[in-house]
Length: 41
Image 1 (cartoon, one colour):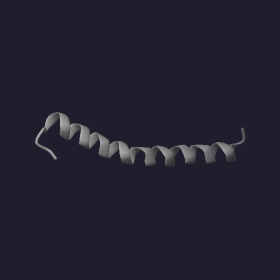
Image 2 (image 1 turned 60 degrees about the vertical axis):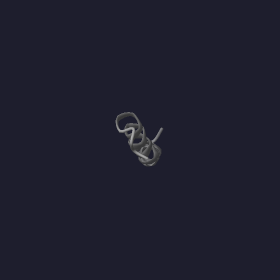
Image 3 (image 1 turned 120 degrees about the vertical axis):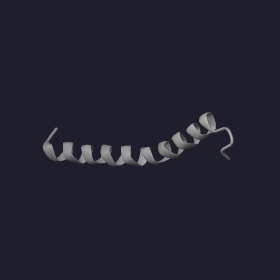
Image 4 (image 1 turned 135 degrees about the vertical axis):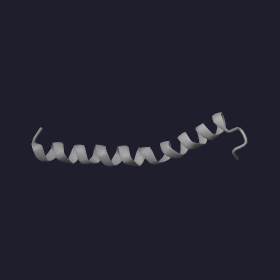
């Protein structure tokens, strides 16, 4: 595997992980809200 392809793969992996963090962040907040604060809507 050459350097250019490795750089592209690394960039794609970085972007996809950042995109995956967005719903995970909100799900984490919702989960925390439901477990810790049962009064949260």
